[in-house]
Image 1 (cartoon, rainbow, N blue to C red):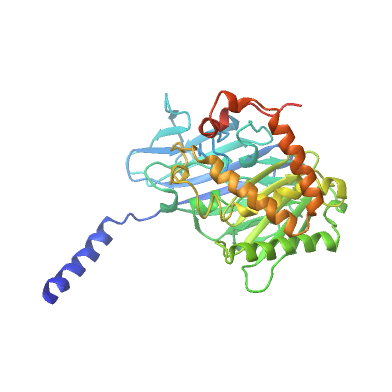
Image 2 (cartoon, rainbow, N blue to C red; image 1 turned 120 degrees about the vertical axis):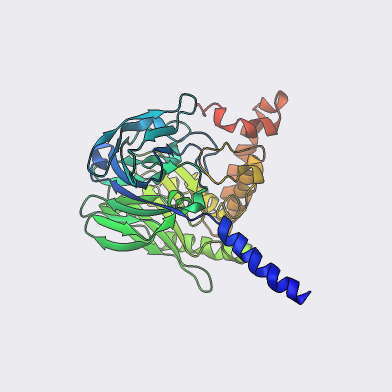
Length: 398
């Protein structure tokens, strides 16, 4: 028996090594220096080993639960050899996010240049789109890159760099490897991690340390068109630090090695909230943290909700919503488990950390119940149907 095991284990190890796929590694250079003109330019370098390369534009972006990757905002797409010779490409007739290009015989690399038009979100891309003006920018990497067919998102490694307006500062969970004024190279990460970590930047920028003892580091990054919008009171900062304390008391541990709240305060860019494993992207009005009336509205719930998603929705999620590429459709039948539990726990944390007191919360809860009682959708369709078709639901109207 021992002799058999001695022979079997090396054979198994050899088999595992032989079938493991080497990671596919490509380079992405993002130029956001013209983001004030609503333009981002991207250069990608893809290794090739055949006479055809097939690339996808991300379609199903986690957190949006919809085939809403904003492919319609591509304003230029060019395939080239490294020495600049243009190559012909075509789009798949039936799958509009899929691009095919022939590579010259013996070629080892194809260069792709992509121009992206910012500030043109659809109903299904608000939180995963890119935005900019002369003072503030938001970059969601899924808007300005393609990825190779045939690999899972954790089998693709990305060497990512960014050029941004000089004098600006930025916030993201991604770790810089090398940085100078207006340029940053990030540490190599897999595609899953890159797309899951957006970036905010701007002239008026502030980072606040919300870390507490015996818990991963937490940071609040603020950016706005005005300096006064990010000069928030210490008592407000302490409420957000209390949010971290209460999350520790509720969950005990965190799935994040560190967590970054990305918060854009702007009257020019849209309101938004989107969850990520180790960060969240949030957009509110310019004075939302300095004027109490605004801070006590829906803004009070925003960061707690997106924060809870780190546990509920990112660390754990319904099996049908877990895919390992960005073209496979997600089964959203259990979406309201994903979102409903998050909403409940987020509201609990909102009150416990002091962003709302109990009376303020109960008043808002009563108004919400009254509003829901007047809606008749449940008389003709199931809750599961609204989950399956969530991205087709009508937008809220006044």
